[in-house]
Length: 372
Image 1 (cartoon, one colour):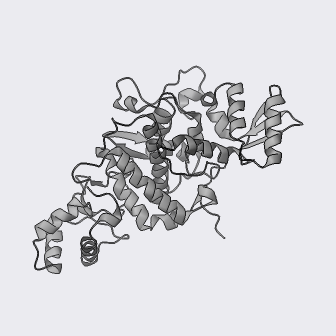
Image 2 (cartoon, helix red, strand yellow):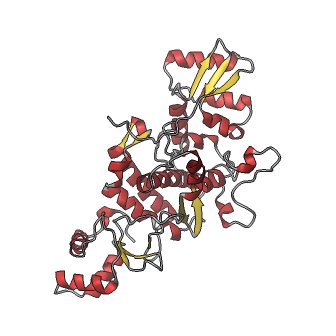
Image 3 (cartoon, rainbow, N blue to C red):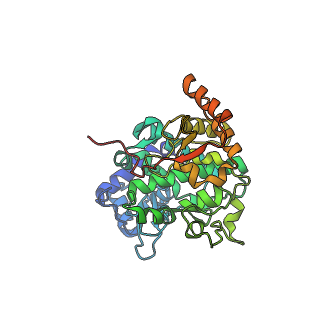
């Protein structure tokens, strides 16, 4: 199967556009149509060709797909975005025709699409995104279409670096997808539920945002926001239980620098970047240096013998290891600072004895540009 929009025959794509117009299907009216309706419209537009053969081609290139819901039924034009159904995976709007491409190939296509979207609609180095403009971009619609291959993709052949790059990118794509079509959570309670409700079907299993972050990338550790984690008398566990097929995707050992790569859609989150297995170490280190170079995330107060840190360091304290290991990570991540700040932070980290850790407030407002 062909992945990218540019690889689809232009004549077939033009016919698809004419069919949408003739059937009065559009982004504002992304309804499904029945097969007879679609065949009749093909025959009306192209009298000299076999409509069944054209329909087969439309399915082959996934320009149309069978709607997943048995209640809704019908055929969807896959580049249009029908309303997401509550509590169902974002990539369950239609059935992908045939086998999916290998996970690595899907990942590369998603990476390419995300890079294009960030170039067009991202700002501040990937920290802010214009979701309204992004949602109407054909490149975003193509990412949504490609995400429907994920239910059938095979993850079994991924090595550790490939798995990390794949799931970091999937997490960020899933958040962008959710913010664009569902919008951000409206309050604190909604936010607690949001990351367990936003999900993709991948390789035959459901993965929520929390499953990807805490189950896969953190080595199957409990979420800091889980009830058990917040109550001292309960023993918190990771999201994947014994016998869960998703256990095979757990990254072991995990790398704490993933916390500088995952963007949950808030202003205080790290910037969104695209990661590849071949350059994962370089990418994660660059993300760490970028995040830690921001004084709103890492700063020192020498007089008070204190380090001011992002809440990320508090929520995931166990991931960053001992105080000595945390100091080492901060020292390694301050290399891109200007000379004065780097010298101050390096000296403080090497000389200060048991500095107090102060965690600054987190800005949960949506990471979109400020409107005038």
